[in-house]
Image (cartoon, rainbow, N blue to C red; front, side, top):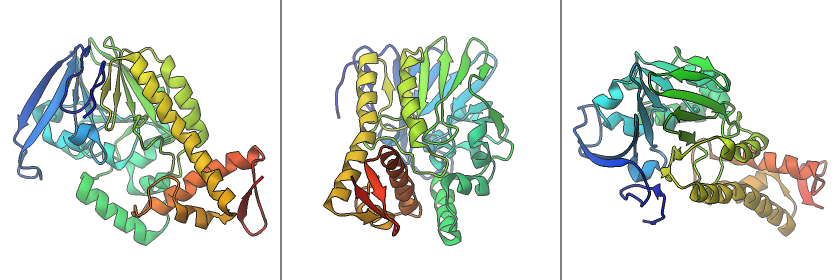
Length: 335
């Protein structure tokens, strides 16, 4: 496991992290599938971060809880939320950074909590048909396979009671305040959430992982993601929390370095795509077979569609820049 000054991953506390850390021995209820759960947490004033398995690596995530003097709030609800216990189950308000299955895995535990979702992701939270539309999955057989997977592995249940919010909306929790900043690209409604006065920014699936940005859903946008990545450093924060894998950053320079590496994955994909076309002209179907987003051998009901949408967005940029052309047979060639 890497050691790097100023941020925290998994089981180790890094120098310079001004927080307290505890390991919790949890006793999951009979409905929970993990017989023995040890959850690491980091506390920043009224804010606590509970680390999912492998620092929240997908399919898990990292859970942020805020103890306002009037209201107890949560950002998203990853799988780990099912094993925290009363501290999560007493949540009264959930502000979703965006809607995907891995961020809804604990909503079934808190049916009375108010749930807020950015307007652009709202229908995805409210119904399965809305989620399918956001995914861009039209094939009924694959949709049924996907629903079964989400129900088994993510405790998936839609929230028809979810309410919408817009860029700049705030929630006063009593001695703590949340502000939402719309940062689309990953999904149309993806937002980052700032807790004040702690200055903790939950950056969600701008997760700074080596996988890079994901923009493979029907509601995703490569162009929007580029703009969001440029804007993110302008938000005044002292602590940055990712949904997945990286965990907590308290050193701005380390955060900016990893943000730059994450952003660079977009241009890496473009270069790989051009290299594939220089080897030989190809159709979209042939490019999907070669894989741009996922490694060879990765399978799932969403993978081919996500690959196609990712590749098409890069091709659209290359066509607009005059670096690629498409002939009448749908074959792409570099120029």
